[in-house]
Length: 321
Image (cartoon, rainbow, N blue to C red):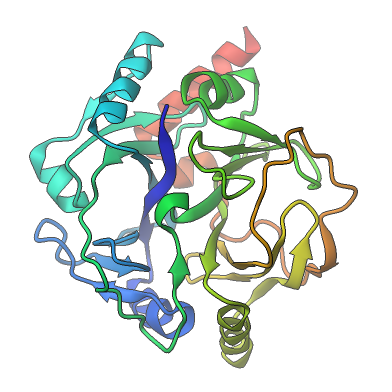
């Protein structure tokens, strides 16, 4: 599938007013206009797209959907057919949903871990329209997508790997240097990073562990780091440089209980051409000063909707067969 990367993410939150302050004043997001269909929602912009992050008031803090961007109409319909050829249940988004997302067409589908995904093309945008919520050099998205997410799943078998690599056509990057069973994957067209999505095996657990976003300069990393420290927001990892990426970053916990990794490329990413197996997670820094799994990771019953739980249960049954 000709997928660029993650185009947008949607969340449910119990603390939308905290996000309203945190988004612009800590991260530098711009508050965008909420669509008429979701007047109580909070939409954030990080570039000239209509939005990149959406937060809907709800009873739990969780990720609701991951929106993948197809290159265009032809590639989108080829991907839809590929899903159907492989027996994946897809739902076509109606005109109202497409208008809410600001896209021309979209479909919805589940992965074997029960998470909701969307595939779309042609999200609305307006050149030179992004205005950060505080002085900020800007976020790097565009041809590489919004960034990456790492999810926890209680079921991590061959079916998940098959879904991502064979059906969606993602590149298997490797397990990284983390402990336990993990996997990182990169979309076909995103040759600018090591991974767009990762999954970690957590028996009896599910939810988003962290998301990563790229900023335009080291100064943007440093200034965000200072704001996080001055506000005494909970940290996960201190400033450091990963072994597997030419990036500098740090991790802190957002109001939603998941960590956000603020990242700047020290040098352009290049494909190694082989599966990497780093000796350690980071070359320097990244001292673990908080939990690896924040409060956003809970039982599947708490963070997955009924359709997601059904998909996860079906995966568990097939893994045992």
